[in-house]
Image 1 (cartoon, helix red, strand yellow):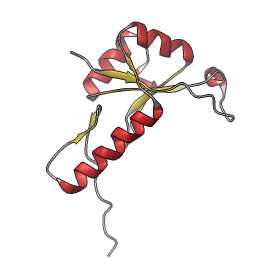
Image 2 (cartoon, helix red, strand yellow):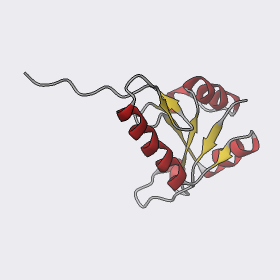
Image 3 (tube, helix red, strand yellow):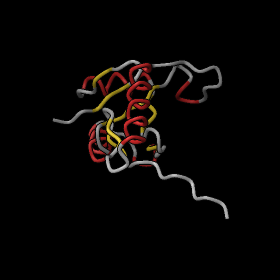
Image 4 (cartoon, rainbow, N blue to C red):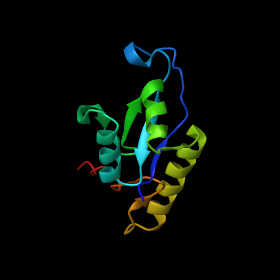
Length: 115
């Protein structure tokens, strides 16, 4: 079963273009699931944003509604943030594990030390 999520729709004061009426994030347990779901709902791959904390697609209100119709699970922005925080704590205590919040991503690498 594919686990794909959309967080809360938020209207930002500095929004532009298609995001004037708000935006949210589409995330998933794995990158493969995320891209498969995005393809299924007509999103373009170049819309993907690979952020180390949360790889995602930004959605307009219309795309958010479509994603929910296709089975994305709505979660609050607070829940999404809590899951990311818990995952970062886990990775700090278990360096061999993969980040696992609802969205499994590659562990972030520590910055290289300056010589």
